[in-house]
Image 1 (cartoon, one colour):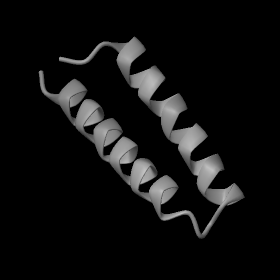
Image 2 (cartoon, one colour):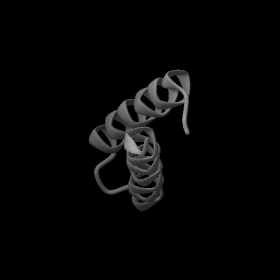
Image 3 (spheres, helix red, strand yellow):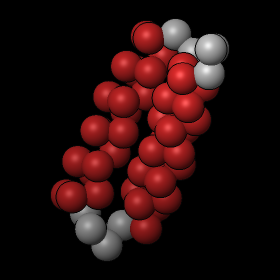
Length: 51
């Protein structure tokens, strides 16, 4: 089960990635990183919901 700190850290990373994507909308590497980090955040949130 993920800790609240893990979820918060991942959420902040996703925000940073989205900002990078907004700054460089044609950067496919930034888009891939954003997608991967968003997927990880989704996994953490789903894991937190499993009790």
